[in-house]
Image (cartoon, rainbow, N blue to C red; front, side):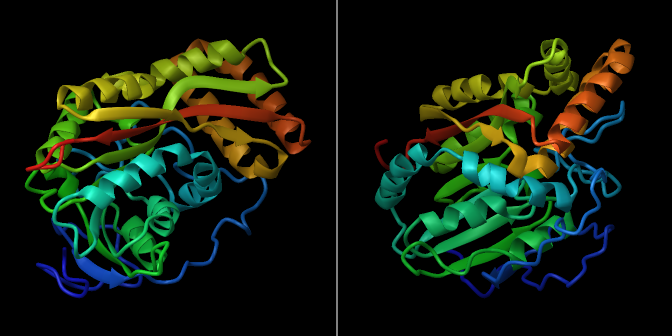
Length: 350
């Protein structure tokens, strides 16, 4: 297990990392710190969070974490405010039923006497660690991967202090390392996790991820991949057309979009892994109005980018939906799927 206080190229995360820190890897090990204060609570009603929902624009950036090198001027995909806004819905949606088989696998992995090492790909502000670490027993060392130094900073300082049984949780940050994701990069890993990542990968990138996990012999818990289905209550005649255009937008440039979970199940199965799937829908009602508003803007915006002929009816549609949301009359179910791939441990049976 990685030493909890030192690593190769060890260092500290600055209080406010600059947007153009282009070092290939800024690694620092930080004991879990307390949560940071909310930056969303005081936001003006009707304000649009940059990066909220699916990215739009013909030159839309690729996912925050890539399986290739990112240019230093490539902007981050998501704003911290959007990630913070969606965190409670993510936590409520993640599939608890996948935790028991994961715990059994982790308990039986060879060479874990010093604790488990968990790699979080595209960690964002660290919501997966805040959800999962307190649900697992034993000492944990989290390796947080992202190319955005701001997000890495937020993830590190808000990471949990302890596991379910009180054991210590420590954190290491790596910027850009996912570009070289290989079994060697995951050497010593006990688990790979990610949230909302599969649907913004290509099939080639997904195959690389599955091969790396299989080569390292570690399981993968990959949550909150879009399933391509949305239900809005009350219904509207334009719902299906907007959803179809959005799904097509998610598949642009060879991205997997709503086909990601099926492709991931195939890719991991081809590597000899046992794959389990479980639904993990967002269920948004009046209590989640701020998130619903931002999601609606991004959802409709992506659909219009894909099909410009929808612009005029979509404007009226969005206005109607936002009014219903503000009145507490709109409920939305956004379907996702969680995937647990139990790869064969290196040197042991599955």
